[in-house]
Amino acid sequence: MTDTLRVAGTSDPMLCGVEACAVATEVAFAAHESARTMQTVALPLMTAFAPLEIVQGRPRLELLAGRIVVVADDHFGSGGPEGLVESLETLTGRPPHVIDAARPLAPADVADAAIIVVYHTQAARDPGTEALLTAWVEAGRPLVLVHGVLGAWPTWQAYGRWACRVWVWGEGGSRHAMEPAELRVVPDHGFGSLWAVAMLPRDEVYTHLLATTEALDLVTATITEGTVPAAWTAVAYPNVGSWTPGHRYDSWQVPAMQDGLAHLIRACVVRPPAGAP
Image 1 (spheres, rainbow, N blue to C red):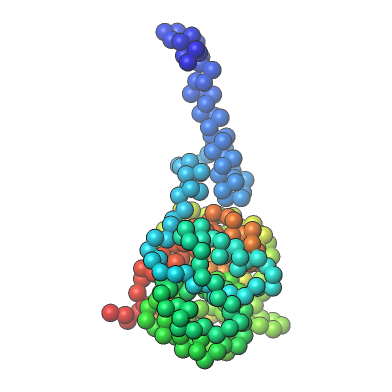
Image 2: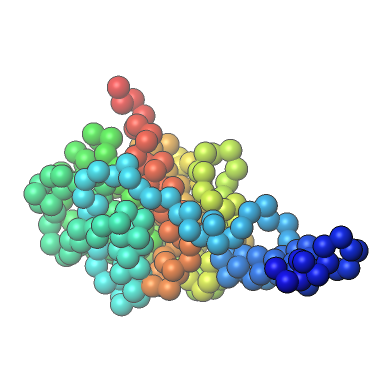
């Protein structure tokens, strides 16, 4: 205020004049954007928003009125399932109901559920679990498949069709590079995320998956080997979506991961399955 009075009616520059403050604000915004995207940000800054507002503006999943049921195992101690559970709690404001994937699913587990999220690599499936999930999907209820579950239930053909792409076990099969990746939203598919391009720190990226049925790709991941699908929904079952990043716990701390998962869930909830009334 003293400096404002000092320069009033004169042409003297202010200590907090716009010339200096605009540059300082641009540098601060660039630092925020670098932290948000985990990549180098060049000046002049090209973003048209305040990066911290984007981080704070993660979508809340108010449309999920019932329980969020997570069926998971420890995924080789990676921390990924724990990061997923924490992310779902952040997005919804309430902890999800976690079920050990080693035991069969029971009707009581999903009686008041809004969505089922699966993250495990169990090979064997219980007949009750198969019947329950089949009825769930055929009724148009949302099912989200995360990371390792693309390698689960390898002999269940219907599940493979829901997933659209599945892990091929054994030599010469699917692979997972462990490196940083550039996530990019596929344009014109209505994904609606808060970002178009984001940097994912070192994490597993699946390559050479087996395509089982047609998918609508929503997000791709680019690594040194090339660009591969990272998130999609099934064309025949758009209430089933797959989100493949998320092996490591720390990858779930990246805002783009939580935002991307939220928008995939939204896509699975709001779109009815093909042929549904």
